[in-house]
Image (cartoon, rainbow over all chains, first blue to last red; front, side):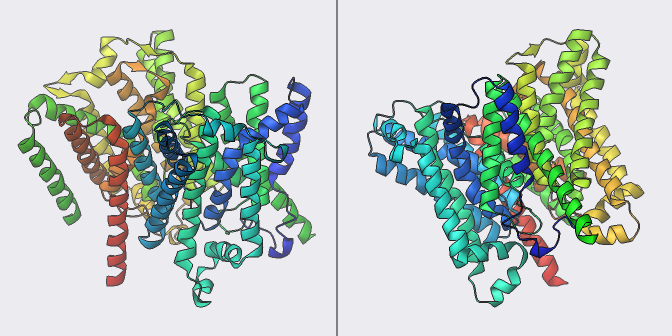
Length: 322
Length: 309
């Protein structure tokens, strides 16, 4: 029942179940997957995981507040359509990216207002905005891809700041920024307190609702920004390009050890979760397992990670009793 | 009862508006078509209603319909036996429900996470299993289940009526049904009063899966073909139907009759959009807005009731 163990267990040193899974997967794929353990392929895992990481970072914070954002994939798709359409019509890259980020931010704020101000349960509120974002993307494009987006975005996407692929660099910057905010500003402790200790925050005079809405707004903004990477990679905008990606993000967060019940979790754990999913997908690709089964394998991965976490927690409680 | 009357009034108003503004609405074929479509949505949404009554949720119903229909179609084609195919679909649907139940009760996953994971897992397996193939052309005897008529009324409406009656008796007049409401209203109180909460939750998720399996058979008979994406657009409307029908996401409040009215309301809206030649791409947007409005009303109603106490 109480899988959390003693609070002083030091949550930063706790290894989520995914840590073990990641090692096992790395070893297994290195042995059985021809060409898995090569530098280009490892970089490839990073590139493939970067969009997911951009979503999983804010998703961690949202889940820590006992919330959820199911609209991310649809909002990302819509932002991609907006980005591609503006580029196709000859607008500057900066303007197009700003518009995509703006669309994402607007959806994030809408989610926050629905959940925090109106009190609609998060999974239904964001399921509703999922439908709205998906509908808008489909109506705007008639269900077709937006192609002919010019050279500016592909050039940026192919660039190598500090020798790293652009998407890895962008994901790293996002990681550092989220890490800084969570560890070194008051906002970080407010977010963890939102999940389990809201009353205390109110008494301490914190603008709780504003912080809470801000968490959802960050989710929307990051979905909008992630459109930059996705559109750069597929060189087009597609109304359903990222449908379901929020599930991967949720999976990464759970696999990374964040709990819904207690409002605890770490961004480092989520990073491990994202890499585990990236390695799993890439390794199955190398073993030529169909992409549809890769989707299903993530469901199995989540269950496996949870079972390991429960077992480890049970072992720890038994150990501390002895 | 008053709530049901208001909802019926809303249905009547939408129907009236459509009858006045379009020529094709108030014709017998169109009315029967609406009822047939609503009965399919009801079948998918009925098991879902039970899970929501326990303050849970089953987001996997649409994907479950998809894979159950594809499996049923495959078995039907390869064995030539309608009964065997239908039994496969039904059994698989129920099996998915059993797994959902275990994730909720044994792994203690929040229902929306467990069943959302199940949604994508089922989707993945369905695409892999079908490999881009379409299975179509079933025997007329089977197709009658989806598109046939008895005494001038579409067969799915009889199926819907049978399950509405059975479900109504279950929820209103059996101890099991009362326990479902009790768990949703106050889980801890239900546990303390001796209700085996885990066993009841397992039952409810299994029923939800089985109803999805049943809906898959009727849906397959109606479409006369199975493709991997068959269940993709079914989840949001099913949830919308339950919520419009007044079943509260917070558990313990609601009814299957409400869900039927919800399914009718939603079908009327979609039918009206079709008759007015609105681009089908607008449907997810409109359904999304309806879902948010319905839950918002639920939240406001609940707050009013609490402040009155």
